[in-house]
Amino acid sequence: MEKETVRIENFSDAVFAIAITLLVLDLHAPEITAVKNGAELLAFLKGEWTTYLAFTLSFFSIFIMWVNHHKIFKQIYSRNTAIMFANGLILFLVTTVSYPTALLARFFNGEAASIAVAVYTGIFVLINISYNLLWCIASRNKKLLRPGITDSAIRKIRNNYLYGLPTYIIAFGISFRFPVIALAISMLLLVFWAISSGKIKLPQE
Image 1 (cartoon, rainbow, N blue to C red):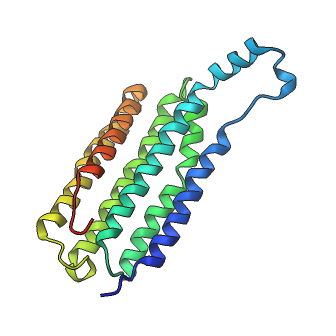
Image 2: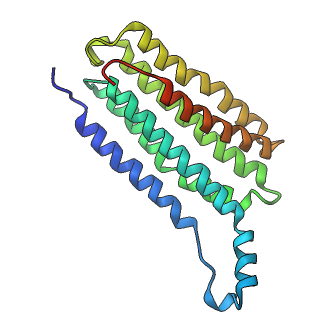
Image 3: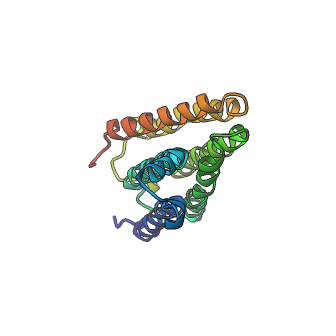
């Protein structure tokens, strides 16, 4: 049986690559006229810590999303219109990550931190929902999946993505009052996805 999702995967890889590259555009060096010595340069770099934090979080978030996208499409063998649109929703949301990243970089260390974190965590709630949607659509018809995949493997993937959703929602909910804690939860979720994506062993992987 020929794999029908190669074009989808190639296009998706390109979108992920562009999205992760866009993040670097928010890293700025100071104007040479604004820095007279090493001490001033060091002070500038220290003042940019929120930018480095936001960049690092978003870079690894998109990277882990790409890893999980790759693992899903190792199991999706055929495609239909619903799968293509669900995948398109994932790509749409991934390309928007650079905007809440910029908000987080500029406002996390100020009075607008709660809103910046809420927007940031909110986008990942939507991304998680889109991953759940993609797998739900694909797994409804076993003929769309890799030949030989078991029902237990299908449930394992489904549960893996469902576990993260309530945590993302909690992070979003508390971000309006406790933005630092909400962002810490987002960091822990990165660790969770990194570990869980490595633990899932599926047929012919």
